Length: 221
Image: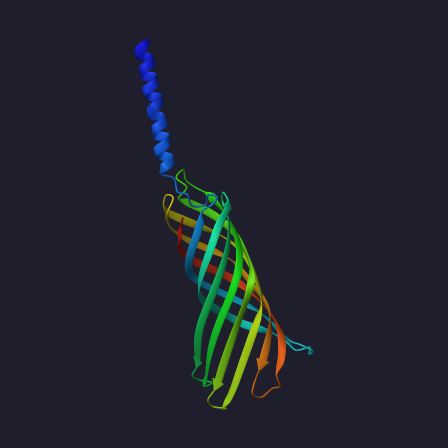
């Protein structure tokens, strides 16, 4: 009987030790109190309409794409729920040889993004996530027409909003790195100021929306 008791105690101790070791190998990513620093790349496509203020003029805008870089800082306020602030900038140039025009666009934005992470494995290294975002975005576009010797400038700014889903993979325990890929909808509603060479300065209302994909890499601690 004494031998059986000793065996039982040894087995219980081994099981407790295994559980402690397994727990020690868990990632602290997505746990309350964890902070994150991240950066990444964003690609979005959208379309929409364009309405001149004080005029019945309205027309559809052509499909467009936008690429930008961003940095962010976040904190998990409870297990699974992260609140994050992101700041992004983009730069793009386009040449139209036939029309003899060259355009340069500089874009910027800031967004607040709550995300909820759901662990998909026992070590809490792979997570599915859902997110929403609300922020402000703007852009300045300058276009030169060498053939007509005209200069056009467009400045826009307004709210941006969206939601989506994704996957995140973390490497490490209490301190580590993570990579995240998301896909969602991004909408923009803004006022556009038109400063065209052959027209008086005026404003327009623009609504755009489309898909946005983001690749994020970062550290948590």
